[in-house]
Length: 284
Image (cartoon, rainbow, N blue to C red; front, side, top):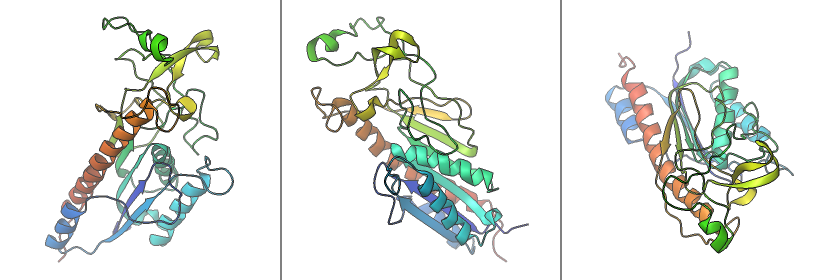
C-alpha cells in the first residue's frame, strides 16, 4: 500500500493564461504547523494556474487538464495512490477546470479528494462549446420562473433600461451532478445577475423563457445537486446597467462573488489539509 506522502493543491484562476504554473493562494498556516508538531515527512505539490485553453482555442481546457494530471503523475512517480490530501478549487472559468481535473484524477485511481471548491461556476444558457472534458457543456437543466411575489415588477428594468428581467429569487439554475466525489464539496454562487428572456429557439420550448445575463455569452450561476453544499453569497456590483460583457452590472456581481469565494476556498482548503495530516500517525 502506498504511503500517501504527497499532498496536492491546485487552484484554477478565472480566465488567466494557463502557464506559467505558480503557487495557489491556499492558507498553509494550519497545515505547516501540524506537519511540524507531528514531525511528519510530507511533500506538498502546490499549484496555481489559469484556465484559458492552450493553442488556438482558448475555451478548450483539454490540454490544461492533461498537463495538470501529468504534473501530478510525475510528482507521484506514476503512483496516484501516493496522494494524501487532495484539494482542488477554482473560480469562474476555473471552476469548470476544477471539475474536469477532479474527475480526471478519479478516473486515474487517485484517492478520494479531500476538498473540492467552486466559485461561480459558469453555467452557459446554450451550453459551453467546447464542453469541459469529462463534465459536459454546463447547460442549466431547469427553466427559469417569473416572479411576481416580491411586489416588484420583474419587467420594470426591462422597460427602463433594456435589461432582461431577473428570475425568481428562489429559483437558481441547476446542472446535473457531475459525478465528482470528495470529503467536502462546496459550490459558492451569486444569484444576482441571473436573468431571463424569451428565445424563439429556447431549450424550454419555442418562444419560451430561458436563462441569460448581461455577461459575455449570458452566463448564469447556480446550484449543483447531490452531495454539494451550495453556498449562496450576497454580492455588490459597480458595473453599469448600460454595458454588456466586461463592465456590466452582472459582471460586477460575478467578480464580487469570485473574490469572496477565492478567499473562503483558500481558507477551507488549508483547514482540510491540516485536518488530514493531524489524523496521520506521528513519526516515530
